[in-house]
Image (tube, rainbow, N blue to C red):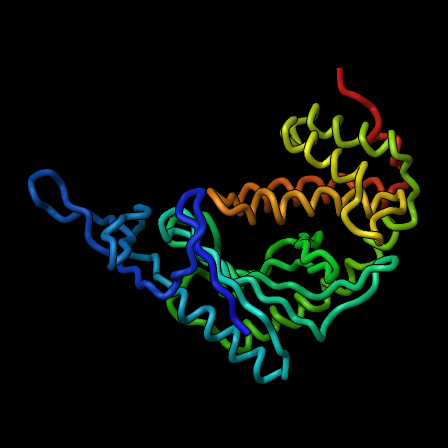
Amino acid sequence: MHTNITETNERVTSKFDYEVEQVPLLTPTGEQTRFFGTRRKDTGEVFATVTDRYEILQNETLFSTAEKLFGQKGMDFKRRTIVTHGGARARAIYDFPAVGGKIGKDDVHFRLTAQNSFDGSLRASFAVGLFRLICSNGAAVPVNALNLTRKHTSSLETEFVGESLDAAIHSFHNALPAFRRMAEIKVGQKEGSRVLLNLADRKVLSERMAEKVVGIWESPSYHEDRERNLWNLYNSVTQHLTHDVAGRAEKPRFELAERVGTAVMNNFIRAANTGNVEALLIKLN
């Protein structure tokens, strides 16, 4: 099952099957330089300046190669595509219902994002995440993106991509214990609100985001979130980011939600791994 959406700059769209080419950049007098522009064929938009050593990897090539591997491994998936910055960046987000685990009382599934860019901002890579079943929240997993090519090239080494997929699944399972530790750490109602406001003070969240998340934390939308622990505090954050930032009807901001969610996760995972939750309660001067 595939569902698609699209984001241009801070607006989301789903049309990822456009092609990008390299066009020579000329001097004002018409002389060719050693530089090229990456140009979207259907709109004519130029994304970045590159040299002749840069090779374009089309979105269709990346996503179809990944999906062929999923099929070979018997991995059923749901897909949605997100295109940002006028087509300069593209992501296919895959959820795998048959690959998952438990965190506290929650069922979570393996999420994988295949990402690509034509402006040098992203290497062709897999980003590992998880999908929380009860509320459809998405969350990052504490692992660096896994590169799919040995350099940015127009051809993919299928064996290398397959090894990256295996590493991504392994990383997902390895990350679950850290989230389970979060579920074991009790956080009082007022403490949780203080943590969120402190994150805003540290510029991890905006003040407006923190206020919205405090509202979710204080009045949970789901029965599973009524327990007061660090995992459910984190779920308050991902609920707001997934549904009210990345998923809002007008001007969805996927990349902002992704960036903020990763920053919050890193703070919470660090606290869970060190047992130093008090650090989250200290307000900066």
